[in-house]
Length: 226
Ligand code: 5GP
Image 1 (cartoon, helix red, strand yellow):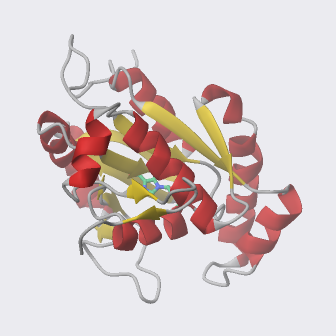
Image 2 (tube, helix red, strand yellow):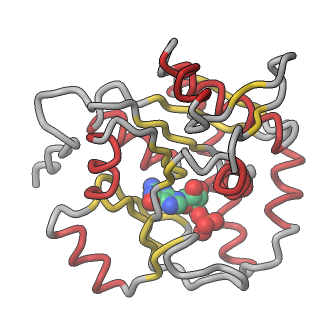
């Protein structure tokens, strides 16, 4: 069977605004970065994925994920409603296409937090997407984070460790690698990269309080208006 042709946001034309993808191994800290950005920089719209994985304690349907059954996931995939999708450690994950398309058509920044297989599909489907790889400071640190999670079975943990090993090797495929030395540093760097996409217009938007603004040393980003 021929592989299905990847469907972009708009075939034949570049994405109207740049899509940013934050990827990297499971447990590297991507979701912590995403949560901090939700609080600190609400101007960065974040896609909410669908997943067949059950919710972890504290996760809310519609905030971290839309939690769906295998059948619902299959239907969405079959109807072409997913921009990308992947199977990870026995569960399925996917990015709903329509909300991403809507944001980009409005010229507003959009961020996906997805695994490496999904990032590859976005690269093929969305010309000009900025692919950012988040790397752990060391393999030992990643192992520590994965095993410290305590939310998965031993089998699921082994699957995640195996996936992490493969995913780490993929960093060369990305435009930029950010090492997770601290959540704050990664957030600052990510915001700077997204703001840079706007060029000079970024400063105007920042002055209107729509975007975050750097402090005088350029090391911290603050929201100008609540
Ligand atoms: P977790 O189960 O720990 O929330 O996520 C497992 C992995 O799936 C993480 O690497 C996360 O980034 C990734 N992931 C989350 N949502 C999506 C998605 O919509 N598509 C893809 N390809 N990966 C996703």
